Length: 410
Image (tube, rainbow, N blue to C red; front, side):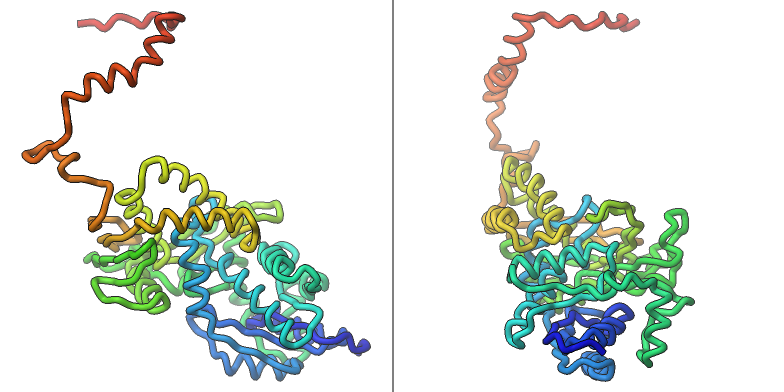
């Protein structure tokens, strides 16, 4: 046993990586304080996690139900930004890391700890997210990464855990690495590392196989206020309940399976499988409502910033000046995103089937070709002449030299 080095606050899930990290840090001479965050894992026994941490050698074990905070301060801002990394991944795991980092720093301040720690490996994004976010909040905090620095394989970690009497779920028979929260579930490792392999059904838990999903669709009406969903089918509910309800309903229809080759921040491509039934449904509805309530140029600029928002979140720059500025722009746009979207859930797809908003830029009297049309058709002549003036001016000055096209035969 090394000499005493003071306290370290460890982000503790009770999984393989953090379970061995408790023992390893204690062996290095640290008094280990664990922090377990409930951000909506489908199955989590907080008291069991506390007992396991203490059994493994922690001197104190904190447990927190952070679901409400997670939804209001992290999920909803991402939904308002239509946060999708590379246009595909709803930032499931990435969104929880800034909250975990902030909680670690808060506990470290309370406990007088000079360091925080995590169980990430050297190949993952989470090490970057947690460390960058933690030092953004406290530039003087030290961040330890036992699993990364120890450079153990998962097999070696399992042997170490067994040697020290630490029960772990991961086995060589079921080698998936799972991360889960209210906003979805990520599945890695094992057969999934070969992009040629179709993900086996035992990898999924939140979604039905779309081929085996019900033959009758469900329709859900989602009401938004300032870009935030507040009701399903007319029933108002808080964010946690709304997401859980939609996860179950959309998951039953196989909605939200994502299978992608993702460009990791650390420089290589990784095959990633996600289950995000509620998020995919909400993102689909939210984007649709914005087309009804936001100006054309606002939409164009917002889409550009949405890409940057997702990249910053993915890269661990949640607490950064650029993201603060993007947040301010997005919040301004969401003042007008109020209305209800009807979505059909069927065989793996969430499809918008209707929208309505009390105040919308879409105007029936302008769009209709039937009685009640208020569009000024006579204005089109002058509009077209002025709109085409720059092109006519150019081509009259510099005649086009296109190759002659073959004449059209009668």
